[in-house]
Image 1 (tube, helix red, strand yellow):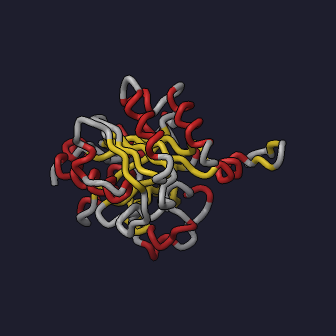
Image 2 (image 1 turned 60 degrees about the vertical axis):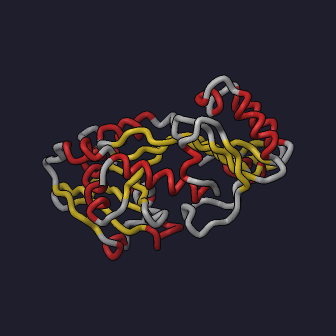
Length: 268
């Protein structure tokens, strides 16, 4: 597998998620598509989308409810550049469109894909033990400390892990979730007192290699503002692949904010 094949697989998966064709992400112009439920989409997505924008850097592909797509199409074709569409102040325009349908912009994320040469060119030797973990080894690890590496609500999707051990104690954990058939998503956690020692990048890189060995493409997601996570992706041999902006129902967003009535509850 080379970088070209990795990109092709990622675009194919995005096509499943957006109810379009792989080629739509390579076209010069933007496109819009009606969202529907798909068994081939990433398993954690809540489909059909209200509105979801995806860009691999060449154009913008939008999918969502049929009734709001005309306004979304006008919006994405009216911005001066692709990046403007995914940033303020233009994102406020999209939010105004969504408000008419009782929805809001909710998630803004960057997805990273592995660069084969960088992944296998890294030296991941460290003064601690790295162990390959299988699903049977995850019992007892569904704790807040490992909430990025493993997902308690979707245990059946956690398929592979790498643990970092110091004197027999687990100090870092990276896990893979089988979110779709061809691609597994990597998440990583390191205990606070063991951070800034290269553990996260060693775990992420080793898990990427183990994922490739099983015939799957690893991918990594980070919020744009999570600088530490973005740096870890880059140090592990990953590079930016695509970006997404996703809308959710306004009530769901309010719930995430902890809002009830006119007040705002303290967030945990």
